[in-house]
Length: 363
Picture (cartoon, rainbow, N blue to C red):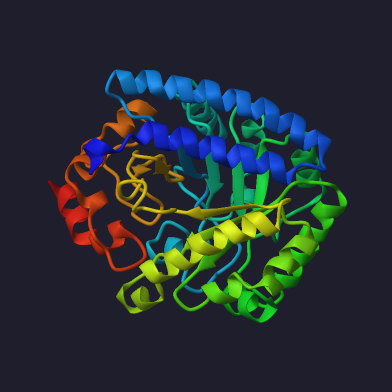
């Protein structure tokens, strides 16, 4: 399958599609349109850089996920980060400094990485890192946040630097959101959305979908509500099981196909909104895009991991470069051993093949 699939062409087309839809969604925002035109030019340059690496036999993904802190101010039920001990209330120890993250951003830019997702924990707890990100207008930094820590300083930062885009996590209506994230969180999210709409700041929403809630998240009533709040970007994120007991909640092919069918109609109906899914259609991408095929993850301590949902690492970027991290024994074994192309019932292929990943790490 891999021999018939050109990952660089797939990534280049994906980036172009994202930016094209983003331009359409920003049609009434001149400031955003100007930024996106510049970003589009830079994305094409980044694609050329990645293609040159590809000619030398080195695949560079277009996306990097950076968990810039292990701390979080919420205790959401079903959180895989807390489940795998990568998130806690404790004061972080030996986390990457803002300067070390800055060096990672520099390397990413030079390698042709176009998108760096800032995650956590709660990333708004690391304003020092987010400020560093504003120095890289060539890279788009979606910030996946619970939306409870928005303040005047962040509003100004988002307004002055269009390459950092807050993406607020919401589970559905008030009852559903508060049941998972805590009482009063929905109201805080709505207040944050209205504040950003009032200040003409582009923001998005992250919707974690399961086998049970996808229909309600796709409902016209809920999408209309997000639209009225001023949301411009909607990410549908597949639920990753935290253990065997929650595996039944993971989406199956049936839910994935339902989402893909609905995405087309949503894009047609809501011309001023951008709709995306993650990890996306694995059938069309030749398997899972983790471990550097399409993206990889750096945890808050510098460990290079295949994916946030697969917290295994045999190399640390404190001691090596991003290129060397992409060529780590674990990453190469996952890419070449067929696990990423393996069959799985639902959720994450690396979760279902967890024992095999652990054996690779031990070997």
